Image 1 (cartoon, one colour):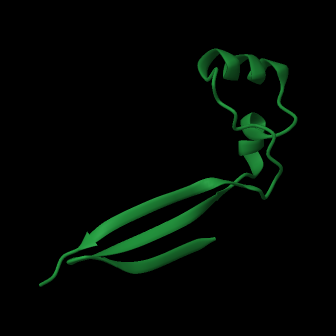
Image 2 (spheres, rainbow, N blue to C red; image 1 turned 60 degrees about the vertical axis):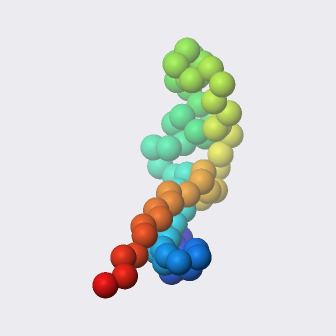
Length: 73
């Protein structure tokens, strides 16, 4: 899923692009509902405040966003 638009912000125009981050495949090993105990231990050790678990295949984790100013010629 993607979306894009040209947005006017006062005197400047910007191009904005967003692409969804779906949870699927290997993502579920760390972000899914059924995480191996060894993986859980590593997540707690290296990401103690992370709450990005419990996802199911196809759910959205977030989105990548790009904003670029369009130069006037």
